[in-house]
Amino acid sequence: MASASTSDSPNPIVLGCGAASVDYLATVASFPNPDDKIRSLALKVQGGGNTGNALTAAARLGLRPRIISKVSNDAQGRNILKELQDDGIDTSYMLVAEDGNSPFTYIIVDNQTKTRTCIHTPGYPPLLPEELTKENLSAALDGADMVYFDVRLHETALIVAEEASRRKIPIFIDAEKKREGLDELLNFATYVVCSAKFPQAWTGASSTPVALVSMLLRLPKIKFVIVTLGEKGCLMLERSTIDASEADKIDIEALLESLEKKVDQSSTTPNCITSKANLRISADGVGSINGRLLLGTAEVIPPDELIDTTGAGDAFIGAVLYGLCTGMPPERMLPFASQVAGCGCRGLGARSSLPHRTDQRLVGY
Picture 1 (cartoon, rainbow, N blue to C red):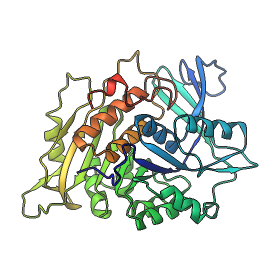
Picture 2 (cartoon, rainbow, N blue to C red; picture 1 turned 30 degrees about the vertical axis):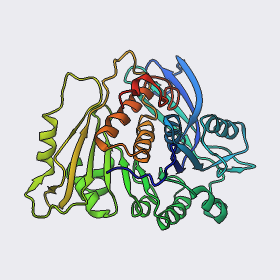
Picture 3 (tube, rainbow, N blue to C red; picture 1 turned 90 degrees about the horizontal axis):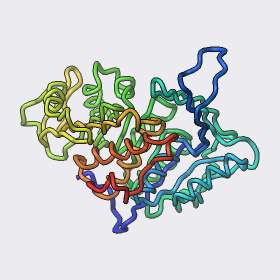
Picture 4 (spheres, rainbow, N blue to C red; picture 1 turned 135 degrees about the vertical axis):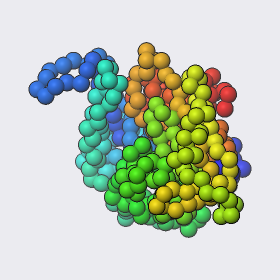
């Protein structure tokens, strides 16, 4: 049902367009006050950026990613390219500026609150749509099973999305927050994964579940939307292809409440609780859709193993890309993605602890 792969290849191809950068990660005992001078407990420099991270996760799981992005010909840019290449990501569609600076982010990881604070410096000069030649765009999309956007480099992303849509390649959008170009890209979306705050911010709905119904009504091409909720797991509203207009309507908030009651509070591993399929799911004042609701729980990570949540959402997305391209049913894909994200939180930085498909913790999936 959730399968998007049109290829017989054992290693499907995903094309990502968006941010690839360098992260400077400093772990501190607690976040500094203004004018403080403190020492870091640990420092790590590694690749970052939503697209770079998500594609790295997907590559380690077994997909063959390609990336469209831009760096400069500086030490940072060379390291960005090398790290991606070392993980098997095809960087031949990356643009390299001779001058300027590659994008980078300072990340302060607070040991006390287990939070991370990011200060981002964009790359310069920016990627211009005309820099992506028609030949390169065509070659990047050839054989691709899925195209992924983090909504950075939005003008170029829109050109890639238009061509991918023309070729009927499924389009996956990471809606982290409202960004320039997001609304136009969402019109092409087949699948959307968003952050906890996004659905209400984008729709103005009274709650997250109501906002998910609103999103599926406003974006009729979307097959599902997932909202990630950190340690609370995730919620997925999947559109049904079967008409349930004659069925009794069920309110989405009541439906979610019924799923929450079925959660095994004693379990520390990710699980998925799903409603019946082909329900007529309604939201007050918004409307109704045919579909089903799935509630995914997160791994309960022991406090002494939780190192850094940087990139947890990107790890989740990389695993969902893998699940879609390999035909995983959603009820298995959601716990799998939560497990991959949980693995990623056990090391400093977004990529240090991303698991490979052969990792013992993923054997059950």
